[in-house]
Image (cartoon, rainbow, N blue to C red; front, side):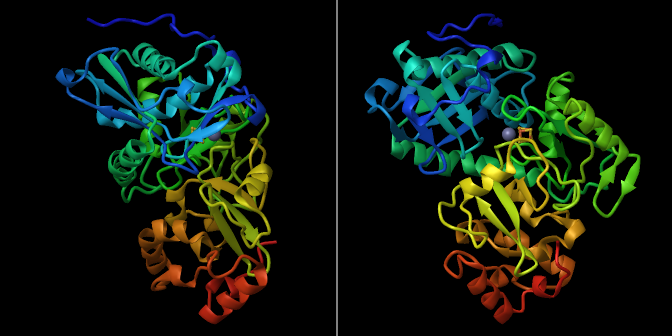
Length: 420
Ligand code: SF4
Ligand code: ZN
């Protein structure tokens, strides 16, 4: 028997009116921040017998056991089962959490996967909002929006550090990696259509991601396959089919049909975008980017910083400083937000020469992407161990030291044309 949820039983209001609500530090009761401690959100498909519908479990402390204004780990795992459920739908549900949680009055959610940040306001807390209410929202929304495929749903919320670390590293990251692998060697040329995604318009009203096999959404959580599944589950939803038949400029990846779609979905705020250029008509960014790439004029290259990186970049800016000038749904030539997977893509700023332009990224990020990035560099330019030529914070945090290092390594960007 399926139960269709209409009203959500929580002590605060719920609705899209609260979606873009910002909660300032001073107004927050408690915060969960995945860029500093282990956090994640995850949907898992289970057998029908393994799921007790509407079951909720809290493993760890509840919100009233935390000090006012403190930061903690959180992991919420939503287990679903259904005759028509497919694991391909997991990322689709999961990406909707951003929207669901933001619709709660007095709760703010940013990010995705294991880079989430959730803030609970003092007002919501004082009204009685606790972990079970967060679970209730996830349960109720999943059951109502995806009732065609979800018969049963249960939610587990973990708030102790040890469990969160375990869930993140042993359950979530392997699941994310597996999903990322599915896109495999699909190319933009091998598909007939791309997809738009406007899930982030609550915070960035004019922002549209154009998702292609070789360029995933900048949040890193919406691949072309995920966008396709989103569209199949909800044909009138956030991901729409975009044809790509009318090429304007192959070099920068500009299409008349893509432009038309972007104009429509941005309500006219955006006129034209390219898929493969950071300088000419670049795609916009909301605030969810896993990474930001910005031009570094002294080396003719680009530096990339990821959200977890807390230090300085050779651009003289930290990640939050870069984010403040890149986000908001406006085109900012020279800067772009992007997913981690995009770094090893053959389409990564292809118009400006591609990944050969990458001169710096934080060491941890470099290690994460090394295998694939090196494979792409080898294939495109015949360079072995390309990441050895790329600087990081242990080598340089200023442009002079960086250029000296790049010169010593013979980095290809130094002999390329200036980008501006
Ligand atoms: Fe969609 Fe882009 Fe937002 Fe990701 S960042 S949810 S792809 S609009
Ligand atoms: Zn976003």
